Amino acid sequence: MPKYIFVAGGVMSGIGKGVTTASIGKILQSKGFGVTAIKIDPYINVDAGTMNPVEHGEVFVTDDGTECDQDIGNYERFLNEDLSTDNYMTTGRVYDAVIRRERNLEYGGKCVEVVPHIPNEVIDRIQKAAKKTKADFVLIEIGGTVGEYQNLLFLEAARMLKLQHPKDVLFVLVSYLPVPKMIGEMKTKPTQYAVRTLNSSGIQPDIIVARSEVPIDQPRKRKISIFCNIQEKDVISAPDIESIYEIPINFEKDKIGTLILQKFGIGAKKENLKDWANLVKTIKTARKKVKIGIVGKYFETGDFTLSDSYISVIEAVKHAAFFHKLKPELTWLSSEVYEKNPGKLKELKNFDGIIVPGGFGSRGVEGKIKTIEYCRKNKIPYFGLCFGLQLAVVEFARNVCGMKDANTTEIVKHSKYPVIDVMPEQKALIAEKRYGATMRLGTYPCQVKKGTIAYSSYSKAKWGKENKKGDILIQERHRHRYELNNEFKSNLEEKGLIMSGINPERDLVEIIEIKNHPFFVGTQFHPELKSRPLNPHPLFREFIRACIR
Ligand code: GLN
Image (tube, rainbow, N blue to C red; front, side):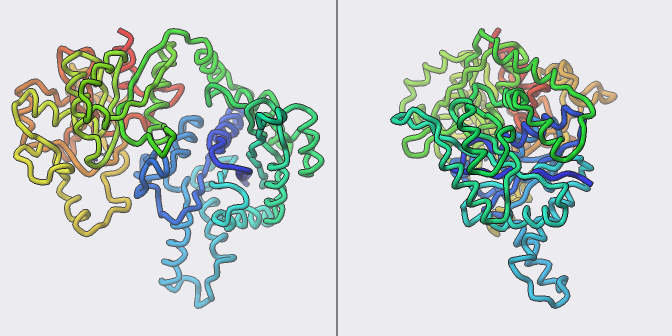
């Protein structure tokens, strides 16, 4: 019988529930158990694929092509496991399934009701994921904050599962404790209210993770203990720290792993967080900097700048930097600024390398193309991800092959040189407005040609399998509707664009690069989605190597 640990949030969002869940998973894994994690998002969207990144943050993609919440990325990075559609749930998904089943007369003529049918569907899905992954521990993160209308049915599911299996379910509340400047003291009252609200859903937390600027002290642990009906030892200190990868190490200072095992009445099979501890040591001791600029457009919301839209890119850069024992320094650069004021491009020289990540639509595109031209001509290491490959091809066609006004048909429908074009099967989908989960999604194979930068990167890191010809076959994750137009392939190749990775089934260009440049590589897939802290992605590794050179 697997054990279930629900993680809910108190007081406010954005306090790191996802990395807390992932860290608890990592700790249990290090004690010799199989762990999986599920993210529940309370919104109606069936998946994250149709949401604007500024609204929602990055859309993460799993091997099986599920467009999901960025927390799935956190789980994969911490647990070093590939997750699937079973690890992700939204209100929309759950209702969609129940309604479909009702239409198929699968409820035997019964009145189908919000309770219990919706929570039952949630429980079924959790149990299905448990069975499929054969995990000893299933962590379930309930999105949003306690007290919200939206996640009530998921809390109800958690309560019902506990009722069915009283010994196998545990509740963790990750709650925020503010230290208001004018008071100068950590306040517990908002957390007391959060627990009371949770209690009104029939749930008593077993563990409270006290998120705050600083570690929680004994008097405040005592206060939480008295007012929230919980033992002092069950309050875990979770202060702000420099790196999220330090969280498992920090949690273990309060022995959260042992605490959880004791509550379930089981003993640890082993203790091994050594690799992780070494990683954290590197992160904390690295001094030499590598400066990377990310040129995108999903940064600004009102007066605030967010980097959530590119979280996997950022983490992948960090993993590779840590591999080289460097301190990564990332800067957000707005492509729209370069569009309006090309004089500003000069600032790109202040960086060791530039990344143009994935993107959609026309805003800021010309600024990105100018960025790429500047990197190519000034020999600044350049790494283009998905849209970053497509626009590098556009730039090369325009400025090297003399195809004036070359473009992608995503931006200009009828250009003279449509060097990037919509994939044939995508045309019908767009015409019918069938946008949900219809891009080219998930893992596809790519054959990497011997003698290229891409080849040496993958071979050095021992990723992929070599075939008889000496090429390497890799598997990478995708999310796009447009592709390099093969009609222009030979023209581009003649002028020096190297197609170093090809999808063997459909002859699609997956990787491009150029010679006589320290590093100029673009990928149609998203390598950032497969980078892990202890196993950085080969192309990011070599990109950073070129940056420091
Ligand atoms: N907009 C481009 C496409 O749909 C690139 C997508 C991306 O960068 N993820 O093909």
